[in-house]
Image 1: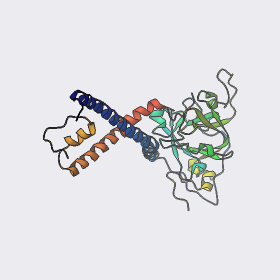
Image 2 (image 1 turned 30 degrees about the horizontal axis):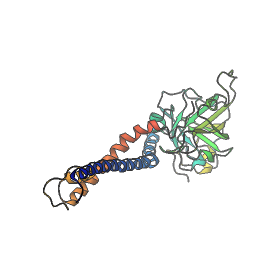
Image 3 (image 1 turned 135 degrees about the horizontal axis):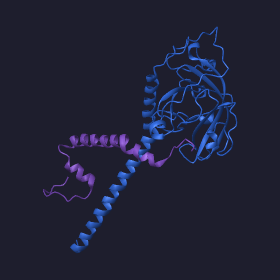
Length: 258
Length: 63
């Protein structure tokens, strides 16, 4: 080597710094990749496993078996309404035939991401109507990741049944419209959808249901909103709503269809 | 293979890790895989859920 020892030494120092920096970058790259794997795949695995357990743990009386010759009469009188449970309590199951025959999600009270939406599935906005009540049953769910219960929310068509089961009652709503709004537009979950803060609350005469999810997918910029209106109800002891039977939906606890 | 008996100065963390691990190459590979699995587990179980709370990639409620 013709270079002086000092130059060689400085080179060595530069090499060490560059080498260490390179290793840091590689490590950061690998960890970022791992994070993507966790977010896009592992959160689904964990959340779906958890929700499956939650549904089993409900341990409700199964609905009466389906009698094809004598389907239960849909009831359109005011349905029974359960009181709103405490935060975090799972109080209902949700079935949406459009989301698939095997699709079912638990509904818990609260829309906190960490405690409700990331683990338990669908969240009920506290203070909004309970299923069957006058007003607006408002529900939030992930459209991507964490089990993504509302993944197909944009596929819902007007007239599609959205079915909720509490311990004793089936409530069937029908999709009416959808909208894309900004996160601050809380009027979508108002007792009458569209009613703004400060507007006088009219006498409630209708039973609405509203679902919210993120929009666009993998973004928090806007919200995809679906509105529905109440159609009919049915005591669980009388059977399963015809909308679920016709669609071949697998109801938790029910015997496999004949 | 480094034939010199004096230990090389620590330059790269991963190279140092490889030299620190005991046993023949095969044992080192097994140990490295176990270490990597441990890192993945810690990240999946605690680090990533914690980070995701700050990212708000998938907020879905209004309010």
